[in-house]
Image 1 (cartoon, rainbow, N blue to C red):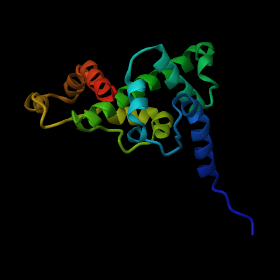
Image 2 (image 1 turned 60 degrees about the vertical axis):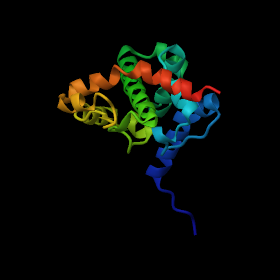
Image 3 (image 1 turned 180 degrees about the vertical axis):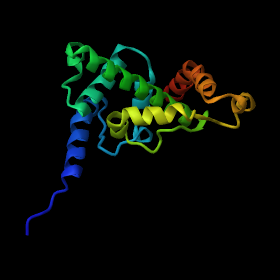
Length: 178
């Protein structure tokens, strides 16, 4: 009897393989359609959390692969509208990577996208980003600014957390140092 193949599952797996292929080569790790930010190694997370052209290119490789737009270096040849879309997704993913880093440091107790795979965040970017705007990352109640954080509106909570990104990068980098 022939084996029945779930086409949706096959498409999702193929998209994950295509999107994550450059990351598998770049980071020497395995990723798949169900990979979440919490599945990334500390070294990979730290690399992706840092600002810069090399990090941006790593995100472009993933996003363009998932969306079927070609290899990362072709980003600069995309039409303006597609470039803007890739950059918007990149900036969103970079924020989420940084929140995951802060979560591992114990600075956050949670954030909106923990339940989503990276693939979902790329494919369903508009909806997930809108969902995140309405819910700020949850600052740890052990934080000295927790009381003030609790009194803020969502947008200001986002700002308070983002102001700590440089400190978080330094702390996380120190934790990784041999």
